[in-house]
Each structure stands twice: as C-alpha cells, then as structure tokens.
Image 1: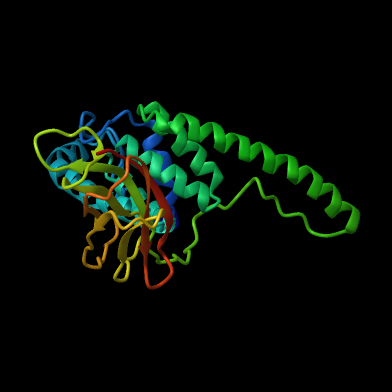
Image 2 (image 1 turned 180 degrees about the vertical axis):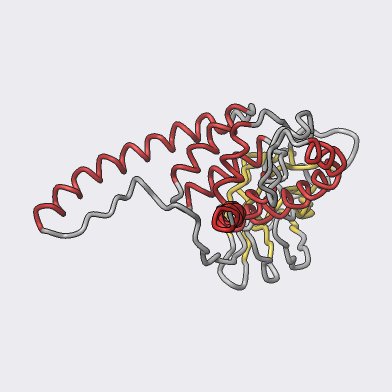
Length: 309
C-alpha cells in the first residue's frame, strides 16, 4: 500500500512540475481551445489554473475562478502592456514571454496573438508561430491574414531548402539539422537599441483666413510636418533645417531649436517662412534636412511649393 501511495504522490508532483516547466508552450496552446475574446471572462471555471493541476469541473476551482476573475483580468492587462512595449522595442523574446504569461490568465486580444505570432516566427519557433497566426486570424485580426500567407511561403521555401540540404548531408556524411522545424522554445536575444526617425505629412500652412497653398510676398507661412521616432532609443539633439535648393534670397526661412525625440514620440515641427518682394512666380524646391549626432538622421526630403506675386 505504501508503495502505491508513494508512486501516486510522485506522479502528482511530477505532473505539477511538468506544468510549471512547460509554461511557455502550454500557455499558448492551452488558449487555442478557448473562444474567449478580449477581456470577456465568459467561461469561468472552464480551464485549469496555471499553478494547479486539478479537475476543471471541481466545484472548488469553479468558485475560485469566479472570485479570481478580476485579479486575473488586471494581471492580463499589465502583462499585455509589457508584451506590447517589448514588441515596440524589437525585443521578440520578451514579447513571447510576457505574451505567454498574459495568455495563461485565460484572456486574449487579437493584437496579442498577432504580436506573439510575429515574435515567435522571428525567434524561429515555427510551430507555435503557426498556431498564433491562426488564432489571430480566428480572432478577427485582418492584418494577420497577409502575414500568415507570407509566413507559409517562407516555411515552404525552408522545407524545399531542407530537402536539398538533407541530400547534401547524406552525400558528405554530415549531420542534418532541419531549418524548417525550428526551435521548441524561444531563446534570449540581443536587442539593438537605436532611434529610427520617420518624417510624416509635410504641409504648407499659410497665416490668415485663407489657405490657397501658395507662397506670396509679405505673407507669413509655416512648413509643418511630424517627426516620429519608431525606434527603441532616444535620439541625440537633432538639428532640423530647411533650405531653398534654388539658392534664392527671396525667402526668409526661420530656424527651430534642436530636438531630442524619445521612443514612440511624435514631435510636431513648424518652420516659419516669409517671402520678400523679389520673389518670382513658379515652383520652389525646398529641402528638409534632419541631422542626428549619432548618425541616425534622415536623407534630405524635397518639398515642392508654388510661389506667385
């Protein structure tokens, strides 16, 4: 009898340990059978808690699940934000880790599945990436449809390459390691920290009641645009300059103070322009120049404007 009790206790402990050690895979795959969308906890008690291995129909776990729903919801939101921030930083490892932890709370969002899918693909965890893409599509994230088609194409290319490599390995007697099978779990990655600038929506704004899009003598205007940092590190002091390619002295172009742009920040830039009486009618070719001291500036952007008397 003692033998059987010991064996049963060992089995229970082993199952519990396995549940903890397989945290990564079970969180993603466990949610594949759920139909829960967003923050809607519709199926209280329908699944097994992450830290518990018990019958999900157990009345005690059903009661605890109902009591714990709000706490899990709050934890899910926090973990989602951590996953999204990691994704914005290009840290696909922690996107997968935080995203997996969020999914283990028995909630999901379409975006979370998609960010998980992209991250898992980049981490070469192809089986889990495939599952996450399918869940993103099932949850209604339309961007995932095209991304999944591109993923399948890449996987077919890897499988075709594997066939060639396998024949070559057999011919040379070398060990064949499949590329298309990928990895069983994500591995920590080194994240490159750098700013990434983007210039958005260049527009000429004319002072006054009317705005006909022309520069005229004596009329003040401003060249307006947005400058966004899509990277995961702040810029140095960026010098933003506006020049007239024609070299005309008819335009008086103002200056702005150098800017530091933080990750995911959008700066709204307005450079004042005023033309004097020597302005000639025709097209004006202005050049926007953005210089960043560490080499992360942008190539010159040409802006075509029209002038008239």
